[in-house]
Amino acid sequence: MADLVTPGELRQLIAAPHPDVAPLPRATEHAGGVRALRGVPYADVMGARPLELDLWLPASAAPARLVLFVHGGAWRRGRRGRRDDMGARTRGWAPGPFERLAAAGLAVACVDYRLSGEATFPAPLEDLRSALRWLGLRADELGIDPQRTVVWGESAGGHLASLLALTHHEPRLAGAVIWYGPADLTTPRPPFDPADAATPEALLLGGAPASLSELADAASPLRQVHAGAPPFLVVHGEADSMVACSHGRDLADALRAAGAPVELRTVPGADHGWHGPADDEVQQIFTTSLDFVRQHT
Picture 1 (tube, helix red, strand yellow):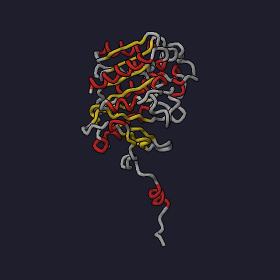
Picture 2 (cartoon, rainbow, N blue to C red):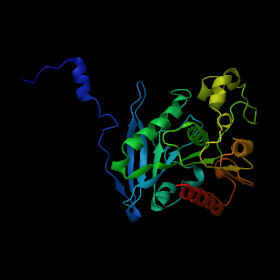
Picture 3 (tube, rainbow, N blue to C red):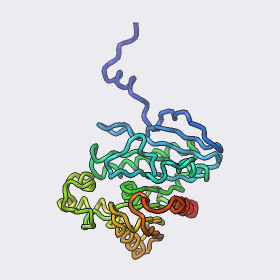
Picture 4 (cartoon, rainbow, N blue to C red):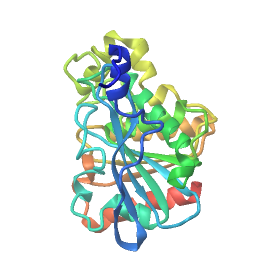
């Protein structure tokens, strides 16, 4: 007869291994030696679902430069099938954007974070910091160099990527690629109204930004700019009907005024998610972003 165990011991026995020590899943092989690891747990948050990431690893044996990719979705949508989505205009690419980055010699981690229906700010930013910690802890095993990490985000993910780059210090990120991300949760910028309690921004904060001024400031990249910020590439459509192009312009202006390195690219005729431009122009935006990552790592 097996030895009896206490309820506490039994919970320990049946619990899944902690992400810090859990075995990595089997990799899927792609062309050119690129490997993909799907659904890798990186954080076990009390009272929440396990947080996962997808990894794309290059064939190179040397420690690879890393892109931490942060998906969009109005801070409201995500989970599996979304965290590795760079936007509608890239979904039909073959190979896809992350496989292309890995083929160029970069490792990519596409991360989950807690959504606004699960937790309010700063929870998603804390999750990105947890992902960086996990990637640093498992760096040797994964063959990545966490000292050469660029964060890349689109839409809501661009907002979180901006905040991560402006507030994370150990180790300092090598750069940030921001595609049409909100930069200011405090000022009316149509269609955004900080007094409206039903906006995605309000759901992120847990109330209308106008009524939560200190939290809205803390969640606004524009309010976190400083001279020691890593290099930024800010790319925004001039016809963006969801996140006004003034977000990108004002963030770039503030970084420049603080003495931080920044490149601003505005795209004439481009709406949110790069709707409007021709396919080759979207490809060029991607290539410009990849070149920026290479240059700064």
